[in-house]
Amino acid sequence: MKFWLYTALRFLLFGVGFFITIFFTDNVFYALAVGLVTGFALTYLFTPKLRQQASEDLMRALDSRKRNKVATTDADAEDAYTDGRFADPEDLQHHAKGEQNGVEDAK
Image 1 (cartoon, rainbow, N blue to C red):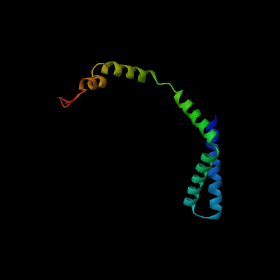
Image 2 (spheres, helix red, strand yellow):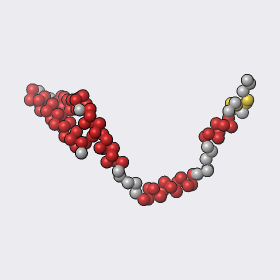
Image 3 (tube, rainbow, N blue to C red):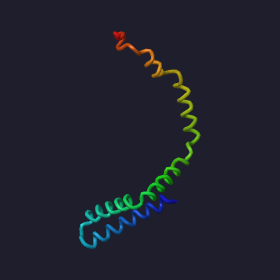
Image 4 (cartoon, helix red, strand yellow):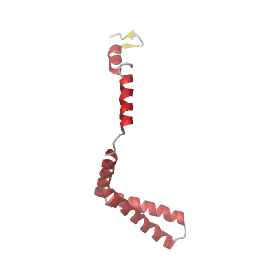
């Protein structure tokens, strides 16, 4: 799965930036910032195709999850309950053409 490859690459680049910065400075927060920026920037700039494939893999994995039967039944019951109880916005717009606040427009 390309998602895990992309994630591993980002962690690797984060680690490289972090440890190089720690080697030259003793400031951990600065090293964290450099590591984060390095990991993000390099993967964003040099691996757009891998990033796109990882995104597609993740979306496919999340879309494949099924809604449970209770949620589906509940949604159907809610739709049946509200069907016809509220005004259709298109009908309201059709009746309101040419008038504003109950007053006809002078044309």
